[in-house]
Image (cartoon, rainbow, N blue to C red):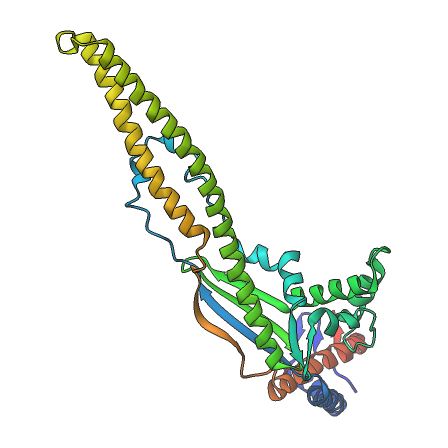
Length: 340
C-alpha cells in the first residue's frame, strides 16, 4: 500500500523513501534501457571535430608624427576621411565570405572537390536521425525559390551548413578573436577550411586597406594639383605686386599686402610638400600586402571529439531518466501521495 508523502501540510520523509524504493526496480530497468540506447548511439554516431583559430587585430600605425596634424582643418578636409570599421563578425556571416569558402577546392577522400559539391548534394537528403535538423532541412527545401537551379540550391545549402557550423567570439578589451568550426568525419578537412577562413579574412582586410589607399591617392593627387595651381597663382601675384610697387619699404600698406602674399605662399608651400609626402604613403599602402592580424593559435583540431564523453553522457542520461521516471510515477499516484 502506498502511503502519502504529503498529508495536509506535513511532509513524510520515510514515506517518500518507501515510495522511491517501491518504484526503484522499474526505474532501474528504464535507466538501463536508456543507457544501452545511449551507448549504441555514442559508438555508432558520426564523430565530429572542432577546428579553431585565434588572432589579434589590435595593431595600429602610429600617426602622431604625421605632418597632417600641422595642416589647418579646412585644407586637410578629406585626407583622413578614409577610415572604415571592419567587423569580422559581419564578414563571416556575409554571402561574400560563405560563397568564397564553399567554392574553394579541398582534398576529400583523395579527390579535389568544393564544399558546394560535397555538402550541397545533401540539400534534398532527408534521412536524418536528429528530428530538429530534419525539420529544418525540410522547411529550407520547400522555401527555396522556384527559379533556383539544382546547382544553386547545392551552393546555398553548403553555405548554410558552413554558417551554422561556425562560432565566433571577440575579447573587445584585447582585440583577441576566436573562430571555431564544427565538422563531421574529416578532421583534416576542418583544418583546411579553417586555414581558408583565416586567409579570407586577412585578404578582405587587405582589400579594404588597398582600396581606401587607392581612393586616398586619387584624392590627394587632385588636391595636390589644386594646391600647385593656387601656389603658382600666389607666386605670380607676388611677382606682379613687386614689379608694380618699387617703393614697398616706404609704404606700410604695401608692406602689409606683401607680407600677406608671402604668408599665403609659405602656407601653400608647406601644404604642397605635406601632400606630396602623403601621396607617396598612399602609393605604398595601395600595394601593401602586410596585415595587422597576428596569429595566437594557428588553425588546428581540438584533440577531443565534440559532445559529452561516454561516462559523462551516460551519467547525465541516467539522472534525467531517474528524475523523469519519478515525476511520471508521482503524477500517476498523485491521489495517494498528495492529500491536502
